[in-house]
Structures are given as structure tokens and as C-alpha cells.
Amino acid sequence: MTHIHLIGIGGSGISSIARVLLEKGYTVSGSDRSLSSLALELQQAGVAVYEGHAPTNIKGADMVVRSSAILDDNVEVMEAKRLGIPVLKRSDFLGSLMEKNIGIAIAGTNGKTTTSALMAWSLYRLGLDPSYILGGVSKNLGINAHAGTGNHFVIEADEYDRMFLGLTPGAILITNVEYDHPDCFPTPVDYALAFKEFIMRLKPNGFILADHDSAVTHNLFDSLPPLTRGYTYGLHSMSDYRAINLKQNQIGGFTFDVVFTPESLPITTVSLQIPGEHNVRNALGVIAVHHQLGTNVHKAAQSLSEFKGTGRRFDIIGEVNGITVIDDYAHNPSKIKAALAATRVRFPGHRVVAVWQPHTYSRTHALAAEFIRSLENADLIIVSEIYASREKVEDYSSKELVQQMDLRKALFIAGIPEITRYLVRHLLPGDVLIVLSAGDADQVCKSVLSQLSERKA
Image (cartoon, rainbow, N blue to C red; front, side, top):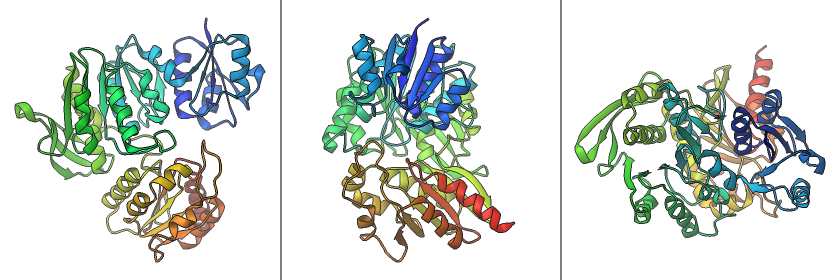
């Protein structure tokens, strides 16, 4: 039995690999600086999880897999190389994990996690028992990864560190392409070229679906490999797969019809309970994949109406004293704009209070103007200090960015405890609080709910 050790096991990417390997019968161990809830769940499932990094952690391992955040000077990486144990990046390992399956890779700047979870759930409800690796926990499936017995393998194909270039899928869905990760891609051109390179990895007889409404995706079809096919999807009249007759429904989202434009062919009707026009696009892309795969699109559409979302994606945590609290992973301008738009649709007429924790110095600095515009739809904006994540702390503060905003409704509060205290004092019945963070500001949600409940009592 092969023993694989995973460095960075607390993150969504590596923890999902651990779960798949465990279900496949491998011996799995892992380590991280601190133990996240995902790491603790794996520990309970039988994975040997170590808090902190040490050379002894890799004892008995036949292979070591590391996340993008783990560098060459990590003590476990150095020990593995000293012992002659193969060390692979996540991107190098994932391709081999799914090579025997029909790989369905969900890529794009925004919407990857929700779309991947929609795809996995719909295949599951069709009785096809897919394998999947998601960037978040599906509320329907209850997990972020699974080694299924079926032929399909759904994977969230992350562009960061060019992870998706290790994959060779049979189907690619690209939600959109908007410049991001300036620490990895110096220019928008570099970013777009990575997606073109990814498309060239499509298997013969495979297909790609790309969002027609994203400007950059139009150029992607110039890169299609031989013996493959490409289609667009979206709300635009020229999209191959198009969502029409959008109407807000009684279960929280939109109901819409799907047509295949080249044949003027009505395909099915979809009703969603997850809010926002962006989720119409996500669901439309999934139906288009089913249509190309030849699976039952009507049953797939029915399954999408059951979809409850994924953790930290417009996740309504609770309500107390008439105040609703939402946790959202949004960390780039388009995601923030979409999350606030969905809030307005779901809670019309309510005051929207947004807490934004900027994520990484490089992204915050490079996209400052876009971030400012993306937050305009909130009535009150609280900006915390930047969450450094994988970067070193720099001499740049988000306070400088707040000074460029409308100071009548925007304020800078550096720390999470201070933000929580401010919210508990100033939130009013009827307010909707949405916390926008890919860092650790999500803890504001539960803290605010807890303290408001105590105040009520």
C-alpha cells in the first residue's frame, strides 16, 4: 500500500486530494502550520495529521505532494529530497489522479467552486457517482472531495501557480477570464495566455465551453487543438447555449429556459435557489456540459433546483434581532460586485453593510480602482487591514485605499476584534451584513451573531 504525505493539508486544495487518496485505499499523512477544520475532519477520518512541519513527519512516505504555498526550503521537502523520496507539486500530481476518468475541468477567474459543485451534484443525482475535487464544501454532498466508482472526474482547475497545466481533461468549462493573481501573472496578457495554454491540453474528441459574456474568452477558441470542439454559453443572443426568460422565483434564485442556439433547440428549464445572475451563468454552463456529454439534461436541471450552494459562497450564517449575516469568499472585484448584487436581489430594500478583508498585497495594490468600484453597491463599507496570505507583509495599508473611497460610507478598521465591536454597536434591525473575505475575517460572522444574541438575552 502506497503512503503519500501531503504538505499543506489544511488548505482546500490539498485536503481534497487527501480525501480522494484515503477513499482509494492509500495510506495518507499530512502537515500544516495550524490545523484547519478541514485538517481536523481528515484526522477524524484516519489521516495522520501533524501540526507544524518537521522532518520526522514524512517517515514511511513513498511520495510527498506539496501545495503551491510550500517552498523548497520547507524542512519536510528538504528531508524528502535528502532521502530520495519523490516530491511533487499539486499540479503535477492531479493529472495522474484523474487520467483514467472522463475529466471535467472547471476553470475561470470567478465561479469555479460553485460551478464545480453544481457539476458534481448533478452527476451524483443522475446516479453516476462521480469523483470530484472542489475548492469548497458542497452543502448537498457535505464534503469537498470524493473518489467515485463512475467514469467522470470533476475538478476545480485553479489557474494560480498554473496548476491547471498539469491536467489533460476531456471537457473544459471556463466561467470567465478576468485578470487576477498579479503575484503569479505579471500582466493581463500573461494571465490570458495561461488559459490558452490550458486549452491546448484538451484531449482529442473533447470539448470546451466558455462564457460568451466574458470578453477574453472569445479569443480562446483560436487555440483549440485538432479534433476538439468549442461552444459558448451566456445571456448574449449570439451564445451557443443561452439562458432566456429569466424570472426571479419563490425559492431565492432565478428560473430560466435553456436553448441551444445553433439548432434553435429548447433544452430544458432550470430553477435555482442560490441567488444572483452570476449563478444563472454557472448553472447554464453545467447544463451545456450535460448536453455535450449526452446525459439527461432534464434530470440534471431538476438536481440544480435542489442545490444549496457551497460553504463560504453567499453562505447565510444566521439571523438575530432582524439582522442577517452572510459569509462570502469573494476576494476579487468581480466576485465582490456579484455578491453585493445578489444581496440586493435577495434582500431588496434592506441596508447592506459590507466588511471587506483585502487578500494579498499584490492583488489589492494592482486592482485598487476596480475594488473601489466593486464595493459601491453597499450602504456601509468597513475595510480591514490586508490579509497577507502567502505574501510577506509590505509597507502598504488598505487605509490608503479607503482614503480614495466615498468617506461618507466607507471606513477603515484594522483588526477583526475591533470590527466586531463596531458592528455589534451599530447594526440595526433589518440590516444585512455580508463579510467578504478569503482570509480569516469570516470569524466576524459567528462573533457578531453570538454577541448580538447575548445582547438580546
